Length: 262
Image (cartoon, rainbow, N blue to C red; front, side):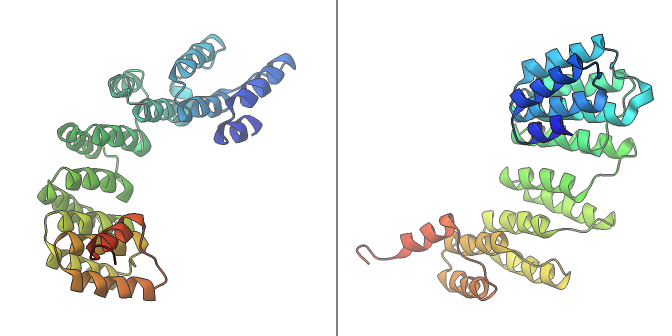
């Protein structure tokens, strides 16, 4: 617990000290302890230390095997996530392959971590293929998994692909959340399809997924970018009435519309 707390706080030095105290007192760290420290290293981007710790785990008899499949999946996923966050995607992909070669089945978190890394590097074709592989293996994507891919597709201007995944999400019985709708609204705004964005905002409320400040700021910026100040102000008034405020980007856009010196 102490190792985990220090690592979550980003203080891996203290976590390492606890591990040394454990060892000195004859208390052997188990795979859960090692996983906590691995997570700490990965969160800080200390991947060389993470790799060394994996070697220590093996030396101390904590090598991943089929008897501990749940923590082993966590161990691999932690490393994959850390590699993706430090832009070492090639190693992350290799580790994803290795875990399966060692008989450890990737779970939804393993897939989502790698999917997020692929999307951030704009390897969208491979990301889509990974989602299909995930479904072929019988692992159900979550709404978060779809959000990751849809957001990247919208950013890349592939609105049709994002819309297809949105429909697929609903057809599979998953509930779109506020972020799901906001991603699609942002995609419509980017393409200048403001009528569709407004319709989706209304549908969102009808479905019981209520817009937040990010949603309103997104559609307001869309109207400003599409030279429709009237609707931008309309949604600004709704946003304020619901207790939300313009964020820095939206505020800057409004200011840029003012005449010089006003």
